[in-house]
Length: 81
Image (cartoon, rainbow, N blue to C red; front, side):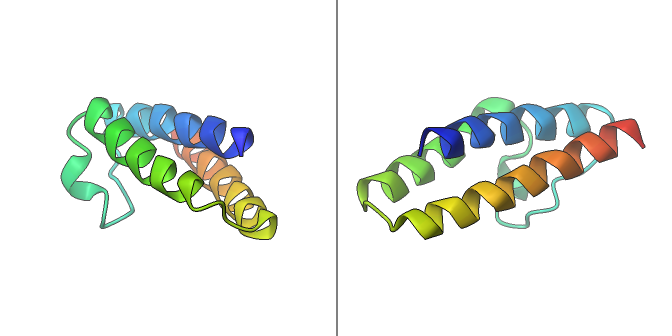
């Protein structure tokens, strides 16, 4: 679960960096909050806190870790490319 928290933080960081370089938030649910990294972080960690309290199966958390690894990788690709 700790890895998922870290990956979400990296997602906020890299998304903010992409937005600062003129990119856009690809997730339509997060677009209204993309004006501020604080808003992005608050929403992400609120949802992640709720998710964590549900004690989800490990395979679901593992799948989410893979997903967020891809998201963070995509953000890095957007910054470099």
